[in-house]
Image 1 (cartoon, rainbow, N blue to C red):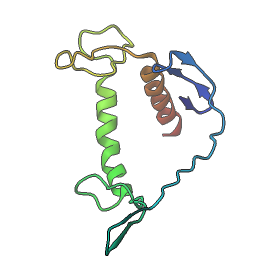
Image 2: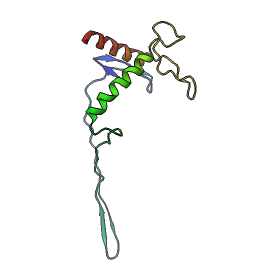
Image 3: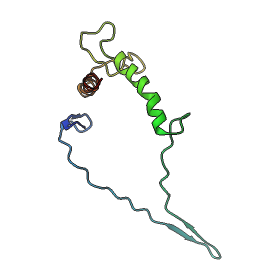
Image 4: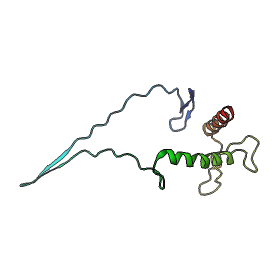
Length: 122
């Protein structure tokens, strides 16, 4: 992952890497035609419909505005949770179903980056 020009660990490929500019990806769909003795049916390629917005929001901007406070609260709640060592940033406070009470270096770095950014811009 690349954030502000910094390289982060990719847990799926077990490698560190520098992200460069992405190559454009194209997808080509073909039409399917079925011919019966007296009829012909053509099915056009499926159109790519825009993703739906979260329930209750008419625009992504309004969802982001609402979600920002929720996400900030959750992020801050995971910094120094009760019973943890000073400076611990939990990936999740869940200890059962599933137990995900761990500190991931990448998540802690991204959280720290947000905290520093907000401190420097407010």
